[in-house]
Image 1 (tube, rainbow, N blue to C red):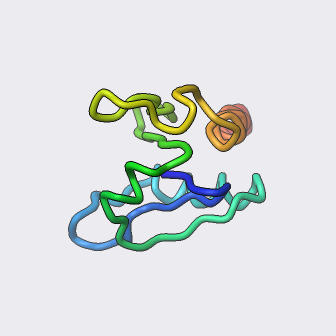
Image 2: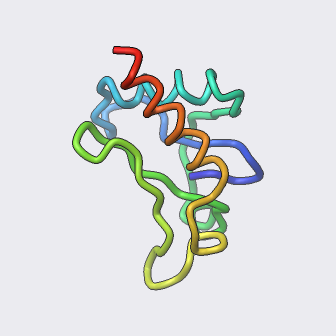
Image 3: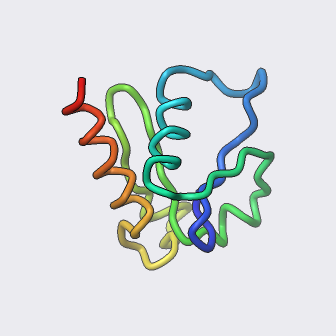
Length: 95
């Protein structure tokens, strides 16, 4: 999730399947100058998020614009998603 321009993700523990995409998201945030913080995230924080993203090997990076029938932020892909999508595509081209 994103709040006030900072990306938040869950801690790397037994509740998350850490793989190459988790590390890649860290690297993309760094390369894009986006702050990222890993820690437990409260439901209330998720509901107040400015943006929300999903990343996976098959879906790459996707914006979440609706959660539980309510818009996330403006209900449109935001600037953090756009920056990370662009960085993701550049990383793929560099392979």
